[in-house]
Length: 360
Image (cartoon, rainbow, N blue to C red):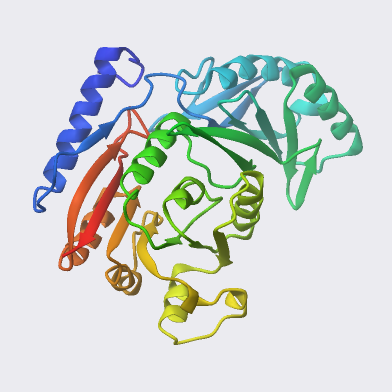
């Protein structure tokens, strides 16, 4: 199998290899059968970043090999169909305009399943009103939103976001996805993750605490299973998007607190008081479940100990190594009830895992 082989047989082999590795890596635990959620074989990435390379009068998208040598990208099969449609059309506009082309460094694409696209052009030069006028004409021609970036400069042609639609167990959820903010790149697998989390918490009851909620990706669909939801997130842009998404979807039982998981742990333990929690009375909550989707570093020891206080834990992990370390502690008090492999990143070694744990 090669990285350029996008056949069904090639995909199934790489998924089998990934599952075998996860089974081996977690052999020390008593796992139920691992549920596997595959990806589409092609056109699954909703976002991508490309460096651009200028050679004489021609500009191309490029990536770099292991020796750091650039090679031109003329097609991108893993990118969404819309992305692949836009890439050559945008490149033709760039090559036809010295104003767009000069000192262009990088192009970022953000697309959605419902046909919206946002393109960011990143430069090593100040951007002028003349550039903005040219970008507006490209927006009209390609029917996309465009952002220009350079040092200490960010010019919007119109919007800085797209609206994605996720279909979860018969219901659609709308999400504002802001340029340069984190979103799940594989929308199809993301829908599988959301459905899995909702299905595995249907009977939990009580209230939900969510740490690292981002733009509310899991928060929105999970809210249907709980009386109240309290979600925390430290990034200001993500908090603003989460608030927007809660209102957009007419959900009324979610509150967001802008703080880190470490800070919230201190608040729960009464170590510190935070003005950012003044709108929240923790005594009003009867948490049955905690949801965590930490960064690659996993849960810090104190947050790990916090999770162990809850009857139910939903843990989404982008790093099996740190997940394994955290589970060694958590399984002292909890039993693994479900384990899933989500193939967010086909044809790579990366594996996204989900674990449902219940207090012993």
